[in-house]
Length: 188
Length: 428
Image (cartoon, rainbow over all chains, first blue to last red):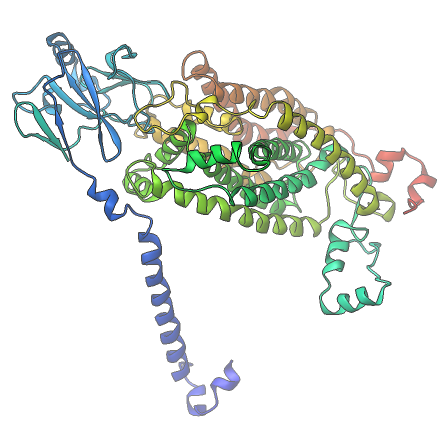
């Protein structure tokens, strides 16, 4: 390397050891490096959700048919959503829990909309590893706290969908939603 | 490297001499698995499992490539195309059962191969690199097997994919975006299925590459042996061919008998009936478990049910599960005993047979059991011992243990202390 690098620039060979050829080398390799990294952008980005997956991201649901004590399952972003009409007893049970003792402290009121404290909308996705908990369907096990029970690894959620026992770290997620009217909600 | 007494490749046919000058591929094979590779003369049947693992990889490659000619990696038709293979494709049922049970056979063989390594300390100097590459192969196998199981797009496929990609969601800060990126969506769907198929086809060839490195690294010090004593003279070795090609051939026959018995008489024995139900994102199977070969690690994942200090239980479980395999990478430096073979290590032997083996059996059983007591408690105790075995017991045992006397040489171990026998070379 040093031999042919010296050709044409012998006067720069000695001294501080920085040659014009070094500059060309570094510039060329750096440019190729930046180019190489830039190629990774589309290669990595192609794996992120595509436009059609992102587009299917809002759902309207009629909740008028849900009686107190009942729940329905619906779909949002190809994942289940639970909409539950809580009975006064279930609300009372959720309210009497000492919030400070919870793993993910939240009151029922913080998880519902004002004036609609009986309608609990949560993702039907266990925060542990993503199974669908039981408890929304008729006759399903509701777990030790009367809410939801995830059969995969034994997480128990209470009537407010809060994690009470088992490996899940968080309460069932409340998705972004709004009441379009008294009986129709829009998720997403 | 090879021993100085290794047979040299001398092709007699002019065509082979011509080839040897241009591309010495037959010479490579001759020196790798032929008469040019001297191997300790005392290898027992546990030394068959390396070759058997190679046979399993070949089996999976061949059946996999032909299955890919009939399978469609699209969430709408994947399940149906699997049933098409089972019902309509000529011999499709056999090819698919051979592939699915071939995965199980591969793991049986590799687990025995790994535990052979544990008992005879095959990971010790100068063979650390062989061991490290082996752990890499095992991790690649796990990734490949997991993605392969997703492809039929049954209930267990779908929920397995969801749970395992959910593991990445446990990583702080980047977890959820990472999970979404891996899946190409918010839940497993067409994007995930397609990329899993692509990678399931790619990774076996990566495994093949690492296997070649594994064998290359093996041929530098040469094979270990049940005494753990180094090869000293020519009388300690025999040429790989015909001695071990014959022994491995016999082992292969036994292996194929067992494999075919499962393949033809109980092809669904190791599967889950739930995977014959098409994937349904709205309903989780009541009892969701991975394939049997993941059970010990699944048990460790589920053993963590309460937060430890500031680390959430979920993250602890994930870290422990990956840690359970990553700890193997440090094994050559955790076990400091200069004696390799468990036969000459009384304390190590006790902890191996009465500690590690029962622990693995408990973890194995609990990983397949429902997430309830007493299995959770058992998993916790077994996980605790598992890590203690590698991180605490092995270093202490190797420091305080008094090994039993080793034979002077491999030849002496085989033939006894007979001066004349020790000097006589085996007739090749």
